[in-house]
Image 1 (tube, rainbow, N blue to C red):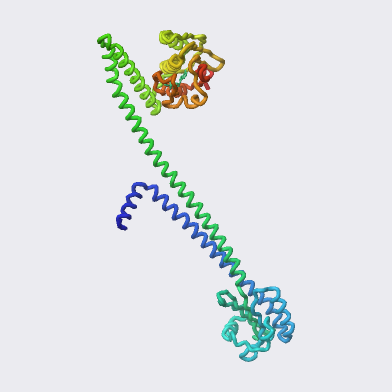
Image 2 (image 1 turned 30 degrees about the vertical axis):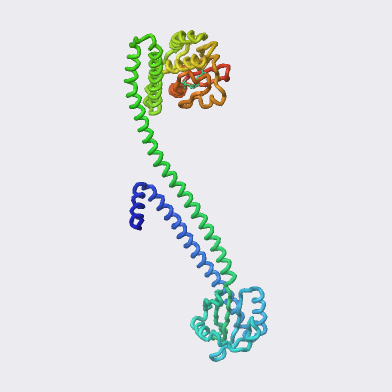
Length: 445
Ligand code: ADP
């Protein structure tokens, strides 16, 4: 691929993901800003250090020159002072006191004793320049074997202001430079660490931006999926009703009776699945209509119990309503009917022998409908995912029972939409109790 192609592809990718431009700019600009500020800070610190050092040398010469003028005729004393100064400060390489005689200058005291008495021919120009400003030290920077040195020259004046001699000091900056090099190194390491942390933060931020884009896309897809399910289910409903209708009308041969029954059962099962899927889609998209009213639902519960009597009897089960307490709750009566129907239907479906009892009780704050059965029960592990979508317990006793695994999920959502709660208590092999509670009207917060 040519460079031009790569650039074109890169630009296209950036155009499709504009959030990346923002992230890229941040990840370049912020570290650059930090590096720039860091550099500035270091150079200011370096300049300050130099100024302090120069002041220090100037001060040392100021102090020495003050009495050097007086003791120019006592070189031994000056020699002693220089040696004591040298022993206290290792960075002083050269320290000379010179007497000016005509146009020459002779060393009268020095850190290097051997050169005492010699004429200083090393720095004739520098001594000339010192003559231009008698009040201040003249400082030069030199490098010797890669090490920085400072040479400072200063005039010695007699009481009446005549130039009588010079002070020459050379200081090695090796120690100071190595300390500041170490400090700069540490500063750069810290700066690099800060930049790394910032880049990490920005990359993290980039991922969050990506997640936001992804979330938006997922929401769109989810909506598409909901619309698809809703349309597909509606379209399925019409032919199913037709099949069910024609199956009802079929007389057929006595030998076809079983087959007709199978058609009926399966189309019922399919219709229930379509209904449940439509219900899930309505709940998930917030389209489920709730028409809450203040009612006492005792009659509805009684009606459902009598509706299931036939089915229970067919299976040899007893089905009873043991309490019929009164209490007013704010609920949608049709939705309430739907959830109690699902609970009673499940108990009848999953009980092979024994009883199903429905208990309607009111406490001080709540109205509770409990459906107890002596059915197959649900293990603790299965109870955890009981209210999940499509959750069906698969074993030899449930395999022949038809169901969608959506009933309890729908029930729980509707109960919650009516400010109620649903819980299950069950022992595998012994039976189950499903208890749904709603706050009594006067007790609602
Ligand atoms: P469906 O009954 O259509 O499969 P539900 O959501 O109503 O779907 O129930 C989910 C699963 O919970 C059922 O498949 C069954 O395994 C279990 N279940 C529900 N009610 C009972 C009950 N009373 N006793 C035992 N198992 C039950």
